[in-house]
Length: 310
Image 1 (tube, rainbow, N blue to C red):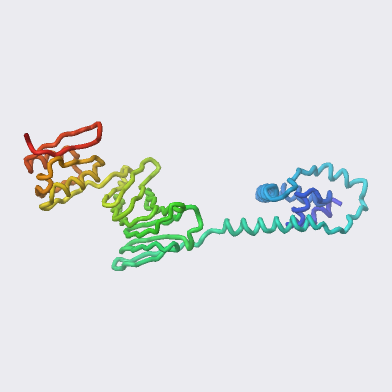
Image 2 (tube, rainbow, N blue to C red; image 1 turned 30 degrees about the vertical axis):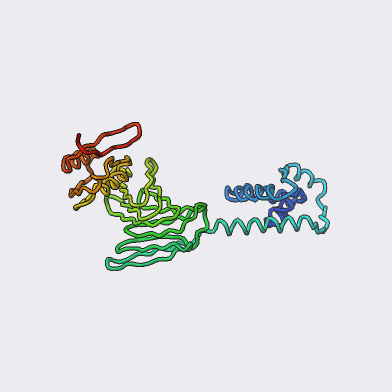
């Protein structure tokens, strides 16, 4: 009898009878022997048992293999009636459906990788309709379909993005150690050996790493340093005969401080100067000295006011 149990195959129908409590002692021992052969079989059994309990009106109850064996001993010649249980076949169909659905959901999505040469630029259209311009010496990887809660892609090199908005499925770019979360916007990304630079055109994104986060809005530029793994706003300016009002707007965005011109008459004063990641105090001093004006701080409101000298 034990040899007969060993020769049985573990099928969906057999598992269904086992979970519904309709398996014969021989069948119960076959399942228990199959589970004990290796860890993979046991994991598969537990997963199917969980799925059964989630979909069946009759939850699975653990069967006692020893009791089943003892039950078999007095009846060596017992033959199992050949009955077809409609409920068992229906349960087997449900279990088979669960297995098929799980296989489809767990099937890896095919990835596409596009690489450009030194003198090549390519335009790509993603599955959601978003547009990508992949610049020279760059590699971009994206899935055949966006079937997960986030639209995940990766970039090495430089590219321009025009992303379709979808708040329920954010667009996430992985570039080196940096991730860029997008809801819908246009921006450019450039990566080299030392940093990743993101220049916003419209909309808003969130740049983040394990330890750092920075929101970047339209008109702003942010830099991720690979050396110290920090994200900061880019503060490199080249002003050539520029109105003070334009300069103040650029400084406000870069330093996240509201810089206000109190007298309209000085808003059109012109300034020409270069600033390469200087402190805000340094920039303000140069502007005040050059234009013969003054500034005052209001820390309680995070404001700086430019006025004419008294």
